[in-house]
Amino acid sequence: MLPRKTILTIAFVAAAGVAAALAPPNDAKDAKAKPKESKEPKEWTSGIVWPEPRVIDPGSPTVPPSDSVALFDGTSMSKWVGGDAWEVKDGYTISRKTSIKTKDSFGDCQLHIEFATPAEVKGTGQGRGNSGVFMMDRYEIQVLDSFDNKTYFDGQCGAVYKQTPPMVNVCRKPGEWQMYDILWEAPRFNAFGTLDRPAYVTVLHNGVVVQNHTEVFGTTGYDHPPKIERHPGRGPIQLQFHGNPVRFRNIWVRDMAPLVGKKPA
Ligand code: MG
Image (cartoon, rainbow, N blue to C red; front, side):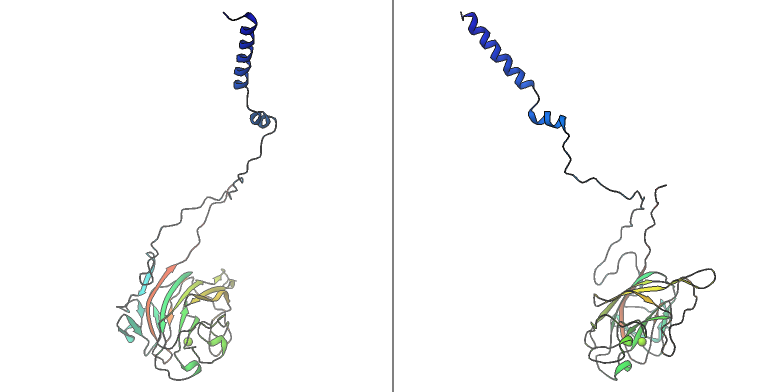
């Protein structure tokens, strides 16, 4: 049998061990004394309730986005007033005889269009591979063979005609396929018919930005300064015939509208 003193010592040591095990760790005690600041950033939200963006299929270089409207798919010019005058062959159309315009009208939109100026180089300046994409039937984004072909800068390929030259000249050689991706914001007129907000245009030429939210000052005539004229919120897209056989293919357009969120009360 153990002596009484030894038993007491064992009991004391055991009790101290249990107490130590039950006691909160030093860290926990510190935390209680002074809460540690979280390293996680506190999330900020605007409080705006957004509708969910629609899901669309982006397509591919040869297949348009799923919510686009095909204006020319390589087979028919049925979407165009005057389209019968243009020849269709091998998946493209060639400008002839007359300018043409879409039967449908468009406001703010994204337009994709591919074009090729004639491989056989004829003429100079504005006389070489001239056509044009007229938004709302009156604002021309110039199409021209500007490959080694000097003209006035605000009239070369990628210009808002007679208003703003392209930032750079990214023309491919005559006969090669090129593309425009045009983001168009229509002008806004108030009830009195005066301009509330001008039109703006962004143009990517062969994937390179040449116009970046460029203000459009009015109509783009050859023989007069930009004119502001009231017109409906949507208008046809015109392709110009300027005497040169310019080819076009893969033309599609889609409406462009920002989501509208609900602000908190
Ligand atoms: Mg033109």
